Image (cartoon, rainbow, N blue to C red; front, side, top):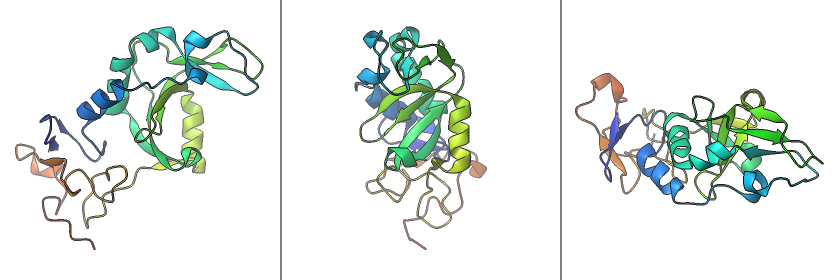
Length: 195
């Protein structure tokens, strides 16, 4: 476990590269729903497939963002320019949303997951079908988020950085001394010597 230098929140940097509490707060202050995925734009037909968030999920956006960031899986999305995305399929306040097939103006099939695409630069959220994301992982459309470049460190690298929250300059977090030693990777507390 490491501790955020800004808010003191403790988290596992093996599961999330940045403080999930601070990141969820920052995301909640941004417009995350594009016209394409906004239920307020229905009925609205396009030529191609899209997904639309449910009204319930849209009204609970802060809680949804917090759940996705805290419990989601960080991936690199090849089809989004290699940018980070966060995928979550789990307990949410409602059905995430539905699919709208090309030419249709209303959704027809419920979806069971949520994706925050381009999470670091231009984040936007939309519902996804978990089976489609799992297929994407199996064929390399989504790949695991990279680890810190510091030798023997198993923490995730901060987006746009080669190092984790501990080893980035300036450091965003520090080792939580109260955490069990097994929760801290070997050499994590050492300086950023690359090897």
